Length: 83
Image (tube, rainbow, N blue to C red; front, side, top):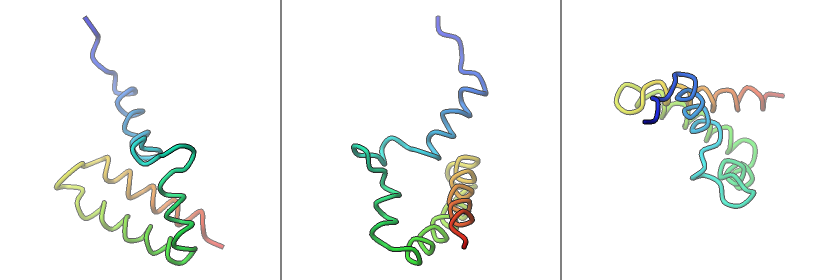
């Protein structure tokens, strides 16, 4: 009988789903990188702001903490892009 997942393993899976979801990668290209290349800097920053708002908006209705982590990811991406 398999033991139940630990809190650490669940958090690790959740973090992987936030940072690098496998369904958003094809070959060596991650979707977020393709979006950034297609939109340019200002367009990508707007995309990140909109995505953060979306995940904050739906937090209580859909994925709870995972949506907060996704919003945080987009906000961090904006902060690391500041000049």
